[in-house]
Image 1 (spheres, rainbow, N blue to C red):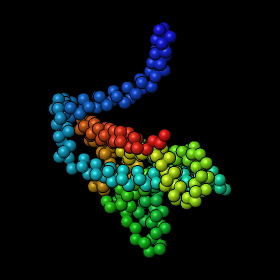
Image 2 (cartoon, rainbow, N blue to C red; image 1 turned 90 degrees about the vertical axis):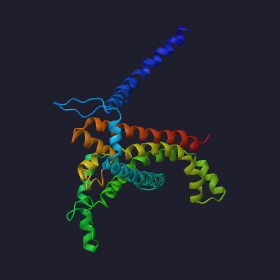
Image 3 (cartoon, rainbow, N blue to C red; image 1 turned 60 degrees about the vertical axis):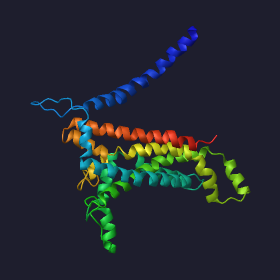
Image 4 (cartoon, rainbow, N blue to C red; image 1 turned 45 degrees about the horizontal axis):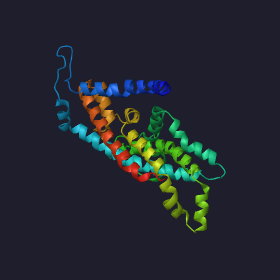
Length: 292
């Protein structure tokens, strides 16, 4: 009995550092953020007061909120499938015993290790009108280029392209590890059966990559709703909120307009939305992708 009791004590001691960090930096801030959203915006003359769900009702009449939410959905749709598909393609390419494969892997992974601010400044050099690299390459051959970051029709697309460029190499690492863990006997058996490379990928390789795809999908969804750095450097959410995403709107509301309660309400809505997506991913998709 004492042995079992000691095992429980040791177990709690082992998980306590992680549990303390989780409660301190995740659960406690979420609870305090929720309570903050129930109060009005205060100032030295008029202190904040309890207003209940007024901040959440104000979201329904906030056109900027609906604009940034729509932008974020387009951003997620534009970045997640493309990043995953490109990561799989790159992993298949470098999962071969070819000359220069090590250099190719390094080239694919390099954007991932660059700081977000550095990446934004690099692409600012590409997108700057007239003197940017894209304009210098396209204008001489007669292609009229837009103001990439100043045109509402291209600002969000420019951010989507940067995200795909930066994230695909990170996701490639997981797919490459999954490919190298697959048994080479599967490919040999497929060759004996006369299966083409495409058929083998569709029937064998890709289904076996689905657990990795779930992991990558969760990370890609989270990343698509937490972009701030690139927007801050490149567009400031403009023009006319065409490139503003929900987390940047929260940042702007809290630290530019100093409306902490409203920013808290936005944060709670974002957490609820991500929680629903997580339930769908783990409750529905996970049951369909694990092969035993």
